[in-house]
Length: 380
Image (tube, rainbow, N blue to C red):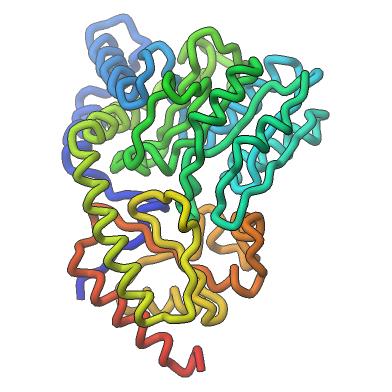
């Protein structure tokens, strides 16, 4: 029985074309890109090409791309970098209640150091009203951080409107686009974005590498001190193979991203229709707001999701209850809680996220397994 991978929001498979681009830098092209000799210059040239490819994906300039070890590091660098730039003095930070833990916990960490933090609520769709951002602004607000699309329910936020409000007020906007990059168009200029985080492994690239877009003229402090790497914002020898992989993945998004989006949406929509028929008590999260094309988040109302997920796994189906970073924590998701969903209902949630590793024909098998579980003694 072939496995069915319905967890692309957690990570995507490495695209063979990305793998082919990476492999030489794991073998004979192993030089340090900071070295002045020929092999070093070759590695530096590959990094420069990757920087250009990532910049094109975002509508940015290559010099505005800072490579990091992950999307979480990029989030930390954005929030803490702004606060530390102001030496934690007279700093007010605004975040939404449904941010990834990398943003929420960074904000709380800064709060313990004296930074003022405002957490904005969302509606029952997981959508943030831009007017709430305007009302929360203060004279000493330094940064607003709002994710482009939620990693659990998939709700897409009105970033351009929020960005216009922040820009008018002279406040920086950081966007966590780890989940949306590759699925939704991003133009940092048109969307008034000053800082933006992405991660390679969410766009069919390797794990362990990400990037932070830093608009030219925006000053942030580094978190890692050492050499002058990445414009002085991220010391340490560059992960050339990983960076090359991120660049190759970013280039592929421009080439095949539209096809990936259409496929993910077709599979998601077919699964939503089938599961609605076999799980009549289930409620879909996020809608009617716009959601990512591959995201299907359901509160099944069939009890805790862990036994359901285990049953699906036994049938060769990989799905999730929410963010992979918090999937082992037996408490209601902070995202669903912020949306006003009660604990019992929230704990019944399942997240199916489609992508290249799942076929339209796989939908029937998932629906059959879900129907069998709903009829099982575990539910009765």
